[in-house]
Length: 96
Image (cartoon, rainbow, N blue to C red; front, side):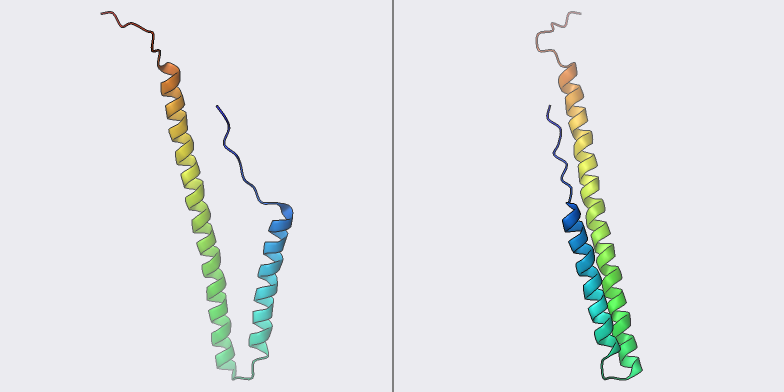
């Protein structure tokens, strides 16, 4: 039996994702802060930005949880199949 390939992200990819996220949120925050509009409009846009960020985190968590669930289910199914194959003896003769 071969072990399933565990795919992991590299440290560079992880750092790039964090830096990209930080730069985008910071740029939007600065853009909203220096917007030539009333404070109510800037507050509304800031609240919208916060909602988008939290929604993105929630979506990422849901996708990760779904992938983890699929991995666990496939591992359980594989273990059941391995057990059945280990217990099966095609040359055994059942006598009453």
